[in-house]
Image (cartoon, rainbow, N blue to C red; front, top):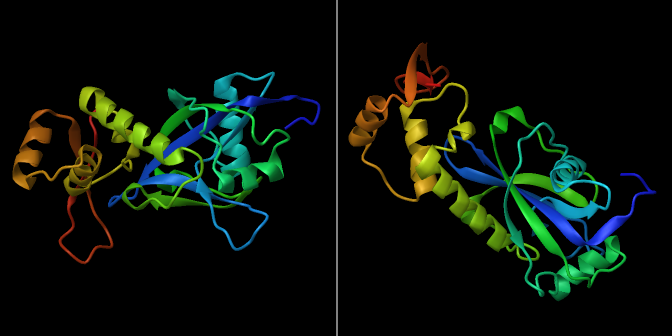
Length: 229
């Protein structure tokens, strides 16, 4: 970040980055650096924008500065502007260490992204003590309104998944039918009958069988599939 570039104290970007580890849907979180080492606070990767950059540029810059991740397609999905979204006393303690106007009203533009976790290795920097993947069903208490932002991002993911099958980007390049069923169940938040699911997905030709099978498993290796583009 250029020291000569003015920071806009009233507009920020927050990034909801989802990843799938074949068992759980995860979201990328940071542990904030706080003046008091006794307190642990967690948040989404996010920060104020610069006056001379677009929102998309800011989102990509902030994500890279805080987590080291780059080359990710980020998509805007909603703005959050509650007047009290940064008024929690614990949040203000953190903001006083990093912002000139910690009590300024901040409107944030939220982005979300879907990544293959094996392609990215997050590394903490800036005001992040550490950066890590967290199961979306077991979120810790998050700073500001970030729990609400994650919840809204999940709703957006479910809506787009049902309408456009957005979400297949979370799968590895080669996957089993069991893995894609698990992804369906997590995103849709429902249990699916194994036999009916497999018949349906093969009939719709959403996936294509490869000549490869799982390796390094204790059970009978399952056939691997790929997205039928």
